[in-house]
Image (cartoon, rainbow, N blue to C red; front, side):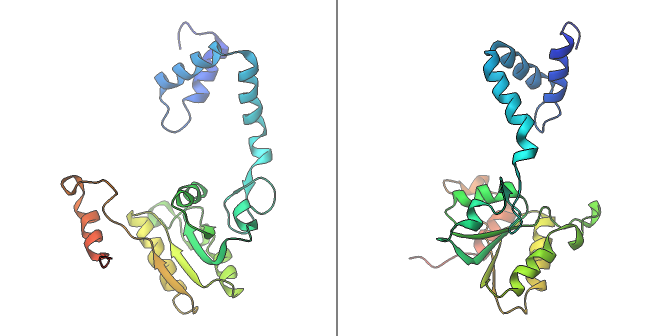
Length: 199
């Protein structure tokens, strides 16, 4: 960028590589950082420098973890017989907001033949091993509502249909506070198919 010192331009370039951050947003962030006290910027730099050394993935569920098993897998008060299968570690954070009290299994992706992602590229073998241990009673398939997400859920439901465990799929439908005129046809169709008795 013309007129910017080399160090500041390099920071803008790095920030603009983040998802959803364009050149203008990156410039605003960089200018904000340069206006902050040096110790605040150093804290940010330290957090970035240690990120890959401190944060990894849980060897059991595949979610974010700092050391060994994650806090969810170590929580004895959760129902670990109930296993929610999600695509990415960030999905665990979203499902947790909904008050889910079971365990998780992160696939680290979803089936996508176009992108060359088959069952071998996901953590399905690890899921098979967890089910074979005999402690899982129900799988809750919480993959996304995309074509690939639906295909992944369908594949898993078929793969584990004869394992003697219950398999469920998260419901799709009208969001809380949503108005019908703004809901797409597919979502509305799903909501009607998955309607529940009035209580």
